Image (cartoon, rainbow, N blue to C red; front, top):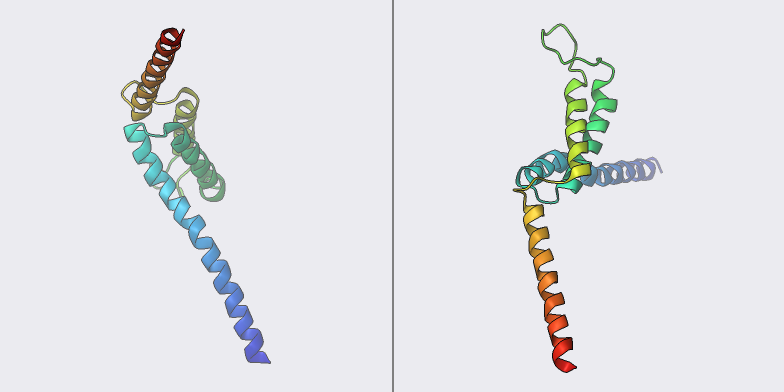
Length: 131
């Protein structure tokens, strides 16, 4: 009976660990994938929102108890959340305004808009020719 209870406890803990792995993997991929996406301007608003969420969690869970300022002199027991607020502000700006003129988002949007214009012109020309 004791072995059965121990075995069940092991499976419960193992399931909890296995369910946490995808969450941890996503938490690691957001800064890396989001940073790369912001660099090239691909899905920049989604990447910015992911970075905002990641920075909020890092601020609340790790850095809030240390204080605001970074550890410039080495006197603190950790880093403050000064950098995280800066990253949140920049990501929020990107989430609201979108990527810049040289981004892949802008290039894809311009390409799709020109295809739509061509389709509308082609459709209008066809409707005139059928009349």
